[in-house]
Length: 214
Image 1 (tube, rainbow, N blue to C red):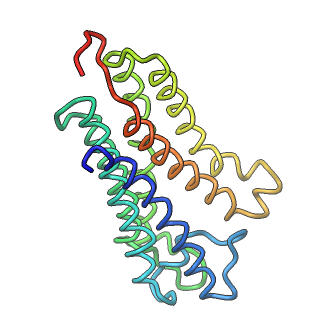
Image 2 (cartoon, rainbow, N blue to C red):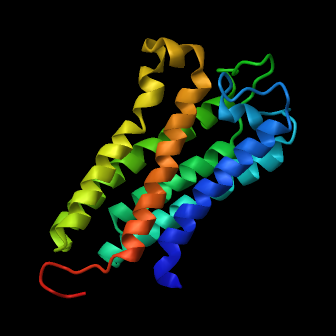
């Protein structure tokens, strides 16, 4: 069962997030997935904000941390930089729920420490994840003899970079500029798909080092 932790946690993280997003969004008839940020479900004063932050942000974030950490331990057997980058990414995602934004008039209060902390958590989640994705590929190239696994990890690294693009390029694409919620959700989709695929890869494939040790 312990060998399946990356698969189980990677799958659960995405499933819980998307189910929660659809459920809590449906509880607010005026809420639009096309035009409103995910964080608007959990800002101070929002209906069911505490429940959303616990289920939609904190729980998936903790699961992502576990998924990434166990993948790192499969390769390194110790808590090194790869391990902590994955843990920080997941905790950053969870931190977005622990530090909800303040939106008194329907828009973020950028002078609020809560809002600043919330936005900071999005960077804490994203940047370590992308760095970890490339470090994972590098580690796999050094330690794994199966070329298909190595190629897959490099593909995942490039896929992680693509997760940063939707929000970055959204203002220059008219459809995404008019529907900002879609760009954000695309980024989230890439994030959770990455951990699902990584969980499958490092659960279903037996790792073999280049020197033949398993």
